Amino acid sequence: MSTALEIEDLHYRYPDGTVALRGVNIIIEENQCVGLIGPNGAGKSTLLHHLNGLLPEQIQDKQPIRILGKQLTPNSLLDIRRKVGLVFQDANDQLFCPTVYEDVAFGPRQQLANEQDIAERVAAAIKRAGLEGLENRPPHHLSGGQKRRACLAGVLACEPEILLLDEPSADLDPRGRRELKELLTSLKITRIIATRDLELVADICDMVIVMDNGQVASVGEPRVTLANQALMDKYGLEVPYSLRSPVAPVAPPPASTEAPPTPPAANETATKDDPFSAPSGDPFTA
Ligand code: ADP
Image 1 (tube, rainbow, N blue to C red):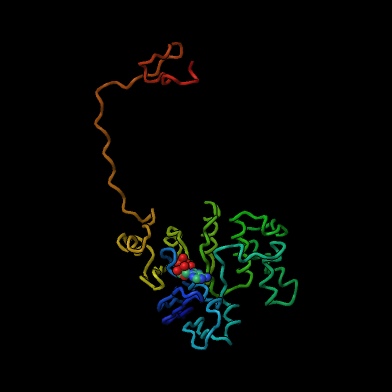
Image 2: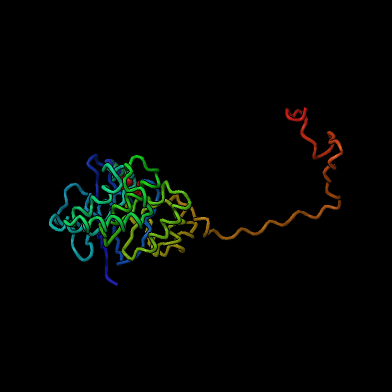
């Protein structure tokens, strides 16, 4: 297996002075599916933005990031952006064309000249993201979940080798979430998913990175790391439901010797003492 991504001692401070990354070290192998988790403000989005060169504002020659064997520099930036697709946390940051088709075609148009090739890429990505029939809709007429799929389709249409996703399951209903899971599992590329959806990480990721305060706090196998109650508590996270230790079954109450009350027969009148009579004062039983 070769290395997809290598980050060595990455620091970043926003222009307003907020320190967001404080010496991040990460190695990710090709085709791994990695969950990036941590409390709000841990630096997850900031890190993703560094991996496709959106940050820092000015890429330096000494940027401590290697992607698919290539150092991220001002010269390699365009090539790396072509290989690393980012699905933004807020779909509205990504969708700006008059129709879904045009939005999904935007990336391929930067890569391909032939309209037929572009149309094939778009059709395949729209099918994968489950958006067939919505090609001519304005993106702002889509539901939250459909917008998220449109963003994903736009990135998939560029055929990235590394896919970065920022909170991809937010806004999705249970069926949409299940379909997203299947789609992400079916992609044989490197995937890095920043998410609060720890069940998703437990289900589909083969490595989890816990971030806190701009640093990597822990790296591990998802089902081991996420089941670690002390670790989850320390970083303000919760052990996902599916990994909680089973609670001892509650003993049934001792069997009563009294016969249970029987409902009145249809021709009997319910009385006040009768447990099946309507409570007094019920406006519907005057
Ligand atoms: P996460 O994705 O883990 O919630 P972020 O990467 O969004 O964390 O944020 C990391 C830190 O950077 C936080 O302290 C956040 O307030 C700060 N931050 C994020 N975006 C900006 C920005 N545009 N300007 C200044 N500070 C920011």
